[in-house]
Image (cartoon, rainbow, N blue to C red; front, side, top):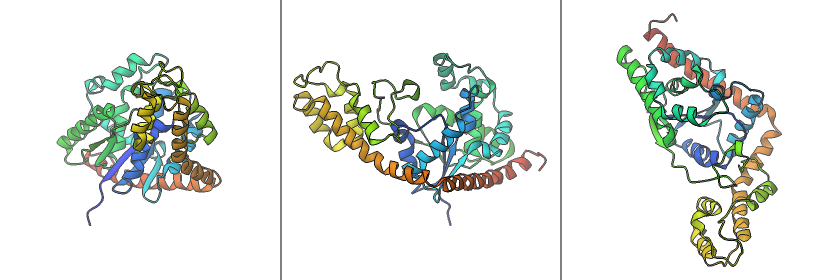
Length: 329
């Protein structure tokens, strides 16, 4: 029997997940469960690469993120949900792979250079941050992932993973699978203030927000600045609310756009339509989350079981890697 192809992906536990996270990754993860064997990782070691100076929120962030995953529809019977630091083989393989990686391979990584230039409030000139792609390669290769869902900004990292796999395979034989990508086309979804959706900006709509909170946040969203009164003609192409409608009300975009341009629908009514649609999407997640929060033992069991399954699979790979490199069993 041919095994199903395998996927590895993950999130850093930096806080509650928002609509951007859902559209950019989580929604796709839920669908991928139907076709692939999926390993979804809480990337807590990766969080340390930039947030090593303050880890007080890490335990709560991990629990909150797993709750969001399960609430959105990830099924622990079909997917392995695990915490990276509970599978020590990740660190072992990352250390080994680091021996094969020339320093320029890491220094040329565009996301590394961009982060150094743009993020001034944190000291990112560390060994861990520079070596982030090597740990990422270990995460992927240790599960023999055939495919990795990524955005365009992550393609250089995945290509580096393939380069590392090729280099090891060339020297020691076919040990690793070279993973391919599934490109995630993320819809444009700005924050409520028109800037990039970011926790640090305080402009996110979270998957765990209540109906009341969603209504309040949507009512405060930035719209076409040139439209002061309801009778003014609007320009939906410059309105972030309309960008949301294109994602969450695709069947009504023509109607809403015409109403905006012809001033037959005001911004308040437009936002109420959007809030209702968002709450329709989020309500099943809220219900599942409420149920899960009443079953803390179940959540603990899901994580422990996922950790065990990931550990067993990772050890199978390391049982091949160690002797291939003539390391002591």
